[in-house]
Image (cartoon, rainbow, N blue to C red):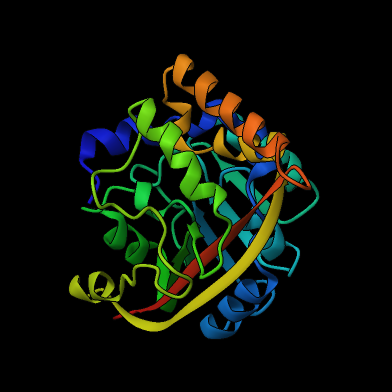
Length: 268
């Protein structure tokens, strides 16, 4: 589990990259949204609460399905981009932290969901807070888009680790930064442990995306660890990425993405 001081320090970095985040972060697979709606038994008009909406990457496809969404986003620049993206839809973006936000009396949600943000919420309170705002029988769902490395994955990623090591941002000896597709960490035991939720479903999704040098660097600039890097480290890393991709046929890199969707039903 991430130490509290690191979580607090790094969760605030994303607001500095709001524009890049909206351009560079991948959209989630349509199948993930379809599965979520089916498992949670949602119908148009249901009220959904999103925790950490960012620029609205997960909000937008659900709002377009006819759901009423309250989206919590503490980063003011991220929230501003989300409001622009959601204009004309039944979605309200609230600039607060989920840990402190207070719902309107009686306004219970059919679903609390969080896309690539649940791990930034204080683990001491996040399940209790979600339980409190859900209607009886409502659902909690969360997932993250992560780098996975299948057999035959692009060797660029292993090669560039030399540069991460050189600048002091490498992995510990023997560390593996990328799980295989279908092997992302299943948080079902954590969900069940608190007694507030029972796991309804766990689903894996995999997809891939091709990046040229600038689009890949743009993606890296949205990751908290890269945002927090000293400037000389960024310059060295991004310069080497440009040089290596310029020597490749196609001048591009293929990144495989994975997501594990957890859906849990409220007890009580």
